[in-house]
Every structure is written in structure tokens, then in C-alpha cells.
Amino acid sequence: MNWQLQEAKARLSEVIKKAQAEGPQHITVRGASTAVVLSEAEYEQLVSAGESLVDFMHRSPLYGMDDIEFPRDKSQGREVVL
Image (tube, rainbow, N blue to C red; front, top):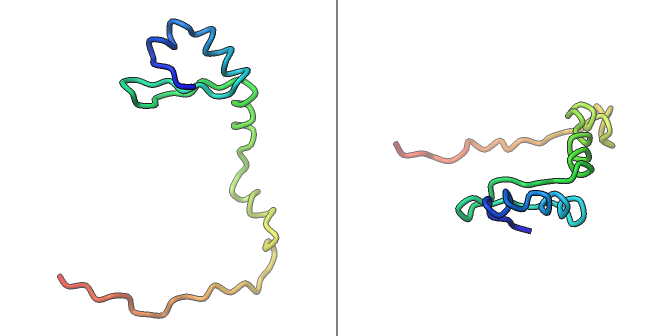
């Protein structure tokens, strides 16, 4: 749900309860989305999911393969008129 900032300030308890029950609550300022109120559970899920790029790559099915070839385009590119 979208809340205008002044409405979100006036009804903060409701915004928080809806974030817990219904999901993220978006807050707008002058019609532009500016902030999102999340439940604690959703926030923890976001920050705890962060793994390093190295760990992610180690989980790849290609990890440890030494014979992977990456063909390169050998063209000279395009001509540029200066």
C-alpha cells in the first residue's frame, strides 16, 4: 500500500501493523516513492541472505572446471569518425 508521508506519520501504528500483516508499506513524498516500511521478519530475511560473491561462485556447478573456454570476438570493432 502507498502512504503519503503526512498520513504515514499520523497513522504510524497502522502502517507498522500493515507491514507485519500485509507486507511492505510504501511512503511517498510529493508523489514520489521515498521509503518502505518492512516487518522485522522481512528485514532479517533481506540482510541475512547476503552472501559473498566468492561463496556464490563456489556453489556454481562450473566451480573447479579448468577447461571452460570463453570465445572472444576478434573483430576490430567499428570505425569512428572524429
